[in-house]
Length: 310
Picture (spheres, rainbow, N blue to C red):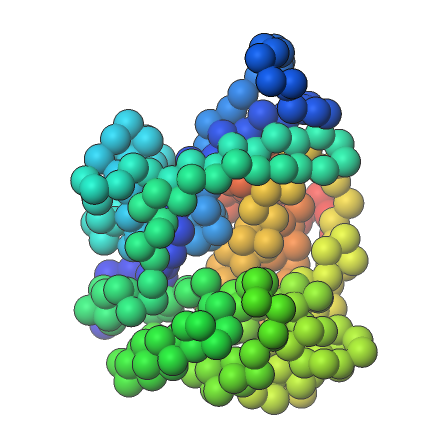
């Protein structure tokens, strides 16, 4: 029986207000002009869902927005792109989150109002909704502080029996790199980490050794290596795909774009290497324009990319 959605995504969504070309912030009492300011939908989970939709899959998104113009804008972009916003809640008690990004060629800095994202907690994920999807993607693991919550929810997801799971572990702000994460891994089909996260969590000296260690516990481990590309390990098989060379304009959401490309390949039945290439291509194209999803390809653009980058 075909499921209602290809993927169910739970997590953060906000407005990204991007101000490029800022070398310094104005002094108190001073007004300075900038060439442009751009408004985009942001939030790692939201960027992942938008990426899947652009590639022709059917994602649903659960999270929260305020009863304001930004919440309405996010719903408009979701619907226009093909993300089902039925599970997206409107919270009249808070306003939609906003992150202002000041960027230049060397660095970025942010001012962030979390707003409705303050209520994000995995225990609120609608498991009846998850059951209507082939796959569920989760983020926001924070080590010891929410480990038991992740254990309970992933155990209930696993009890559904026919839903695969991907987890982007993310940065451990506590700095502990809690080894209890290994208890979660048997319930995860695709575990995403970047190289630094991998080395911290595994206590290994190399990304390859770390990826192999992670794959002994999860269904597969996918490690993002930045400008060098990415690797994946599953059942002892290891594959590496080099990065595509592009001129980066805005690196916001590059990792989430990679995740979306890889999961597109995974859910489409592609092998490890092809899935890595999908992830690398989507990540590369995403950084060529301002905004975390503006440069992300649709399926035709992805196919064209591969024809041109054999």
